[in-house]
Length: 360
Ligand SMILES: Cc1ncc(C[n+]2csc(CCOP(=O)(O)OP(=O)(O)O)c2C)c(N)n1
Image (cartoon, rainbow, N blue to C red):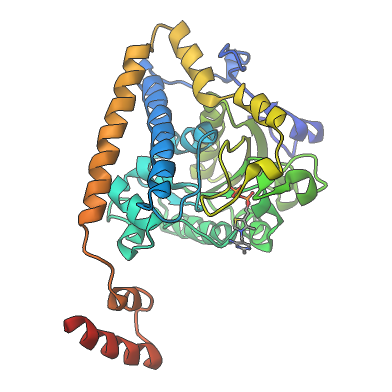
């Protein structure tokens, strides 16, 4: 990984391992991964692409609620997640549900989150994660705090958080990276630069040449990575994790990526702010196509294997949505009782009122 503070010009370079044809262009940066691990990364990316397609379809059928599409961002999301250990904490944004799933959140709970059901926000005991943040940038401040807590406890783990290019314009973004830098907190700050904050292009977001260089002002490491290259994303995150647990402080990772779909399923129309040329230019960089070529060249992947993953994903998604449907409906009292440890008087009153209504 390049060191932003040592060489100012290097801030503007993009770290890459695989080019668009799936050829290794940076042999010395190649992470150590077994054949099984390489295949597992592909498995997760293909599975997640199917999950995205199915989630969009389920949303259109009225069977899911809030949904922020992920296709195009698989390498950024899963390359970072694959570099984590089970005890690491994830503080995701609303588009980062795949990382939660691969960190252990059951699919049916991810679907419940989409439906606004409180159980979708209840992370299982062994899943170190917060529920997805909707307030842009807020998770950056929280990640600095979680990471500082880990440091104080002497645990050898990290807190990783995600925002988009738009999120870097929020005060919370700067507060989070600055605080973590000042306290040497073991945090990894990921900016998935998909080039648009809903319809606002990144050029309107900042005059900075890169978002990674914002690390310099916080005195922390910063790196811009080809976010369509899963090996580069993994290698950068792995190194950031090692630095963090060795007491060398936080890292800001900017991944250059693209979301093929709309911002969310709530009526955004990307054709109003993106051209077909731009879409097709980014589709040529597709993280799955690129990694498939790399694996096929190594004799590690085949069409049959990929089809098996697709069928498995479809089957599991079907089972999960069935389980989602079978969960008890959310009651008003559930909503109230999951907001505060101690209820304020006015909510206590409403609680009594609804308890009575629900018992009838
Ligand atoms: C504090 C705050 N302001 C505004 C919004 C409304 N909002 C939701 S998503 C979004 C754009 C975020 O873009 P970006 O950070 O680039 O992430 P992306 O959705 O592209 O992953 C905005 C402005 C919000 N959720 N929170």
